[in-house]
Structure formats: structure tokens, C-alpha cells
Length: 132
Image (spheres, rainbow, N blue to C red):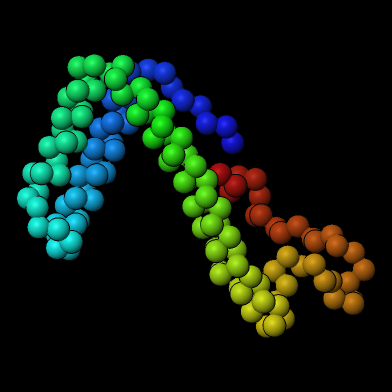
């Protein structure tokens, strides 16, 4: 999947604001878990200054936007691949093995020996006036 960057100052401002909020929340989490003893406002001041500076001079944050979007796109691709792999081997494969050992055939891949065709008879619907 190719990364498509938007070359609009509004997008640069949104990215700067969202990363500022993210770092502010991480700063708050660190203060709450007592990983550092610095004041809460010390973590939010740089984010607020960056957002105001981006609002006044958005061209300065174009490189930050491009670098950040590439970085997060790269990380997102790796994390999604890892998460889907873990889900497949951690959930789907054991569930398939369990169903196989229990004799379940949800896809009806193996038909019983007494059936000569794969056609199923239609269910009676009770008439067209009751469909809707």
C-alpha cells in the first residue's frame, strides 16, 4: 500500500495537534504511574506551543508532517501484520483444530455417503407477502 500525503496546511496542523495530544496523554500517564515527578503542565506546554506555531506558520511543520506520517505508516504496517499473524495462529488455528477433533464440518466439505447430490431443497417461506 502506497502512502499518500496531503500537501495542505490544514493536514499539517491536524497532525501536529494530534501528536501533541498523544504526547500530552503519555506525559499524563507517566505522571500518574509515577515514572517521573515533573509537573503536568511541563508536558503540555511544548504541545501547545507547537500547535500555535503550526497555526501561525504551517510551512515550518511540513517536514515534521511528512516524516511523522512515514514513520507511523511504517510502524502501522508492521504492527498490523504482527497482530493478524498472532490472531491467525493464536485464535483461528486452535479453533479449527478443536472443531476438527470434535468432528464438526461447518463448511460441509465432506458429504455423507448416503447423499448423491449437493443440492439443498429450498425452505418454505410462507408466501411473498410475508417477506417484507
